[in-house]
Length: 413
Figure 1 (cartoon, rainbow, N blue to C red):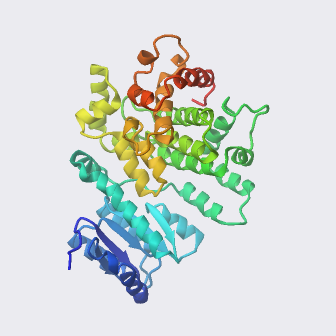
Figure 2: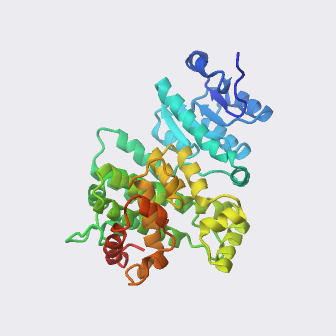
Figure 3: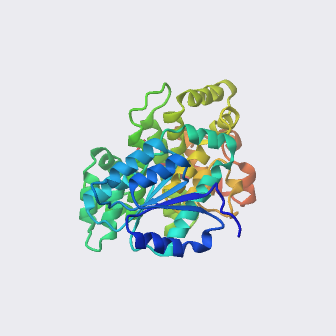
C-alpha cells in the first residue's frame, strides 16, 4: 500500500471517540496522500506535535476535566506557529466561539460535510505548497505567528449567518470600532459613490456598500490594526491603508467601466483592498530585510517586487496570497493578490480581478499625477504593457486613466 506523504500531516483532536472513528472512516481514501494522526485531548495532541511537526490541526473546542480549548490553541500558536489551525466545533457559546476564532485561521461548524472538510484541508495544503519555493519557506518560518482572523470580522460573519440579523444590527457591530466606522464612512462619502447627501450612519453605509464589501473592509482594517504599533522608519500603516483603499476604489471603478457583473466588481474591490497585505507581514516580522528592500528600491530606482525578489527571494504578493489562502478567502481574490505584479501568469487571460488589481495599483501609485498628460508608458511604468496589449486593453487605459484621475483627489486617502 502506498505510504502517506509525510510532508502533508494532519492532526485531528476530538474528545469523542466516535467522532475520531468517523473521521478515520471518512478519510480512509486519503491515507495514501495525507499523514493523519488523531488525539483525544489537548495534552495528547501537544505531545504528538512535540514528537513531530503538524502541517494542519483540526480541533474541537470543548474538552472536559478543565481542559481549555483557547489555552490549547494559544499553546499551539506559540510552540508551532507555522501550523495551520482550523477549528471544527459544535460549540455554540458566542463569546467563547469568538475568542477561539481569533486564535484560528479558519472555523468550521459541526456538522460539517466530509467533502467540505476535505476541500478546506486540501486548500490549506495548496497554500503550504507555495512554500516549496525555498526563500519563501525560509521567510515564513521566521514569521513569529501568521495573524488569525480579526475578532470583529468573526463577529460580523457570525451575525450574517443569522436569518434574524438586520442591516441596523450589522451597523451596530461596525460601530463598536470607531476607527473602522470612520474608514467606512469616509469611503461611502467619497466621489466614487456620487451621493447627493452625506452619510453619517454606519447602518446606512452598510446598506449602500453591500455586506460582502463591508466584510472585506472589516477584515482588512482589523489586519492593518494588528500592526498599528509597528515602528519602522519609512513605514506608515496609515499610508499603507490609504493606498489599499484607493486601489480598491479604483478597481471598483475600472470593473464597472469594463461592464463586469456585480460579483466580479466586488471581487475586484476586495482584491484591491487586500493586495498589499503581505507587506505588513514582512515589515512586522523582518524589519531589517524590509528596510534593505526599500533601500535597494531607492538606490536602483526599481519596483518593490523586483527589489524583494533580489533581496529576499520572494515577494509580498506571494506572502499575502499565502495568508489569505489560510484564511479560506475565495480563489479569485487569492490569485489576484498573488499576481497583482504579474497578471500575465493568471489562469484566465481576460479582464478579471487579477488584471484590474494590477491596473488599479498602478493608477493608485501615480496618485495626483494620474491625470497628467504625457507618455502613458512612462507615467505608468508599473503596468505590464505586454499583458495589457494581449488583452486588447490598450485603447481602454487612457479612458480609465481619465476617469480615475477625476476621483483620485477625492478618494479617502
